[in-house]
Image 1 (cartoon, rainbow, N blue to C red):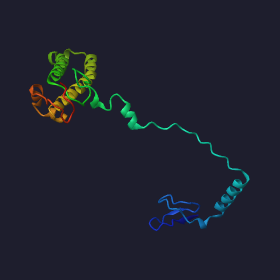
Image 2 (cartoon, rainbow, N blue to C red):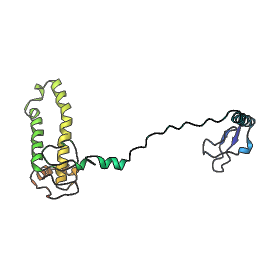
Image 3 (cartoon, rainbow, N blue to C red):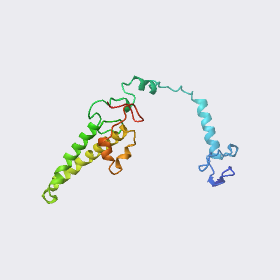
Image 4 (cartoon, rainbow, N blue to C red):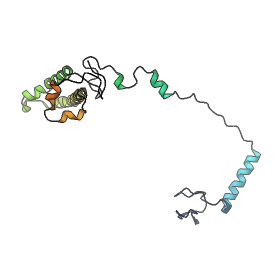
Length: 188
């Protein structure tokens, strides 16, 4: 047997024993309890009279540490607090700034890595070596993109500038910002 939800916006058919509408969540009239519900209520009342209610045991958990205090106690609050001084600090991270020298060395490393495939004929390379080289190519591309992004940051530009044709030459030869810019402290 079914009944209609009392909510005028819903008015969907729901089971007759439902206390709440499963569609809108509206509490149905409690004065229209069915016989089964009345029996259940009576038995619950009898049980509560005959059985004393036991106190619930509360397990106290230690308080969670304060996140802000935890961060203040850390040696480094975020990645920008790491030192940018020195060559090849965090070469796979996209945050921070690098100087021309580090970018030039990074580009030389990338060029030396790709040199064997530029020189050797494709037919002379074994399939196993080609697979191995391609697997190592993924971190190498990540490396050169990260270094290019940091060099763009040194010029106070977004890392996306490195995909502009011939911008590579600007990154190789143009001087970076001497002072702090939007991307962090000077790497000098």
